[in-house]
Amino acid sequence: MSAQNSAGIQTLLDAEREASKIVQKAREYRTKRVREARDEAKKEIEAYRAKKEAEYKAFEAQHTQGNKQAEEEANREVEAKIAEIKETGKKNQDKIIKDLLAAVYQAHPTPAS
Image 1: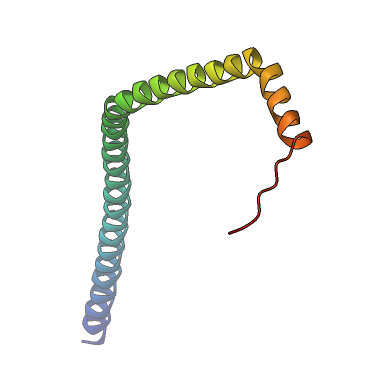
Image 2: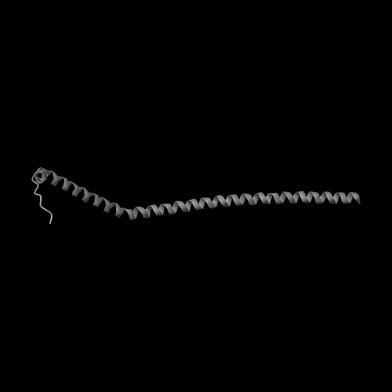
């Protein structure tokens, strides 16, 4: 009977080792699947982010084009006005200087009332 008990114990130990191997393989498989799922999710997130970024850039380009045109038009108008003011200043420079000097040299003080 002792040999039979020993064989039974050995069979149980072998079954336990086999079960342990099966459990270990299942854990490894689960860990592998979790990593694969995480990597796949990261790829999907990155693709979605890139898609939305492209959509945003297209939207921004479409809606800022009008602003750029208005800004360029305003800059052209400002440059034209500045050129006009400079030209007017050059034409009347001598007269303005004479008038300023005459006002300084020919002061007509008036008493305060």
